[in-house]
Structure formats: C-alpha cells, structure tokens
Image (tube, rainbow, N blue to C red; front, side, top):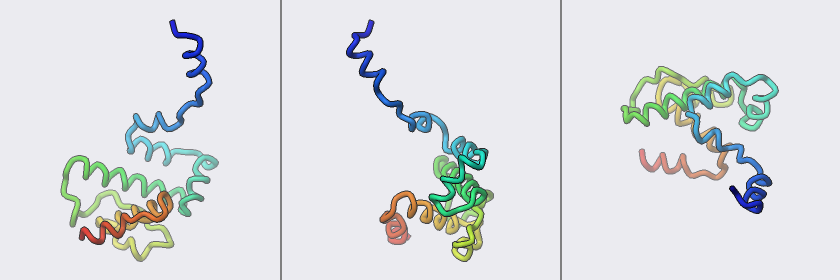
Length: 128
C-alpha cells in the first residue's frame, strides 16, 4: 500500500495534457483536427492565420511527407499525390503544389509561427 505522503503527491499533481498526443500518430492528430467542430478549431486557425480548410490540408500533407521520410522513400523530384492547399497569402510560392518545394514553403510558414526565429530555412538553403 502506498504511503499517505506518496499518494498525496500524485493526487495533487496536475495532469499532463500532452501525454495522449505522445502515443497517437501524426495521421490521427491530422484526422482529429480535420474533424473538429467550429468553436474548437477557430483558435488554432487564428494563431496560424489560416483557414480551417487550408490548415487541415497542410496537416494532411505533412503526414504524407512524414510517411515518405519514415519509410526512406525518395522525396526529391517526386510528384506528391497529396498536395497542400495554397493559402491566399502564399499562392505564388506554392505553385505548383505537387512538388516538394510547396511542402517546404508550407513547413517554413508553420515553423515561423510555432518557433519564431527558427533557422530551419537557412539550414535548408545551405544544404541545397
């Protein structure tokens, strides 16, 4: 039996809300986001400056690219079957949207919002 002090330590701890996301796949997260009701997705859309339809498309595309990489398939010069929808503010950069360049532009836009000051694009440019 647990000591009273030990039991109180775990009873008073706040639950970690990120734990469920550590055990589900990115595809499931993408699907869950796509199927959220309007009140739930509005805050997420607002923080990224994208519509629900565009962001759902981007998450689906990220999942597709992630799976290609995870299975060690060729990524460069590949015609992507799952394409990100071009947001109005970056339509020129994402056309055509069936190549890896559009996917990389999408990733940079998301990273700029998630981690301002990221050097990812510079590192990618140096690697090319």
